[in-house]
Length: 414
Image (tube, rainbow, N blue to C red):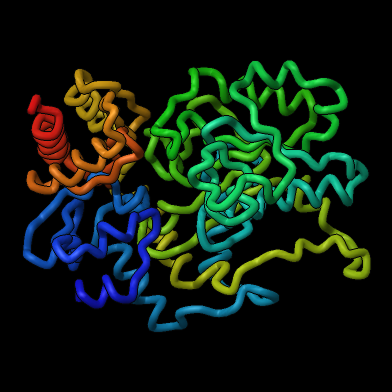
């Protein structure tokens, strides 16, 4: 299998020359249960990054397994273009009911975080174009932001490394360093803004960079004062990662667009959703001849299997009282990591940064951690711990102990 992998596969975000080297033996993950993964040699590891920030309730959860199996006995997938089905209807209702208030009423399903963002941005731009303010053709994003890898989502990003061959493509985007920069915009510049896009509370790919407390609330107030749409990218922060169902709840903000993916299905299947308001929805209504329809979508939008998994995940949140158990876990994670270099935390998202001229130090720490039973992935020299929410206090202690041992080994004086 490893030989075939090296001959035929191309892995994302992975330098392939060292991967394909004869002496490199990749981990082939063959089994998972709860927070634990097992490789081809039978070694077990704690899943310290929730399988790239997706897994919520652990691997092989019986409730989600059963829901997918039950749906398979009916039908796996049907087109959502001009047709509908019960799992999507039920999921849309449950999702809009999760958001405080009654502002968000509509759910648009796609495949992944990038397409959830693409949907929100396209909706915002088309809304203004066909509702009397076509000059609103510019988007505001923040420095060091990451909103996905499709062309439009990547154009919003503030990290050149993730933009591929060039940075001049996609939407018209104004990148700002902070909230204060918005007050420096001229009247003409503000009149061209269609929407502001932000990762609430914490920027993920920027190295888990925390926003100042109250920043999101102030941004929401600024957008409302200017009648500019606010798009929240909760692809990473949604579904309990910050201690509440959605990060925006910490500052009582309900945006015009809420983008969700990753943990939506509990980490089982690709599914994303863009939640928006009745105001936005009504801006697309009209006779088909008027051309106001939102012509965007994907073949697997609203996948029946994905919706079944997502409904089961929400059921697990309720029945296992997942959110209620998080405060103790969040506190323990913070206590155990507090003295690590560059430590910061946002709920069940924790990170540390090693100051080193060697830009591969973070990767070396993660590789060393495998010998202590921990799998995670770095962002440069920042090492992130973001385990499934079902992790126990004992597992948290083991996870941090493994990280500490790896840091000590890699950073020890030679």
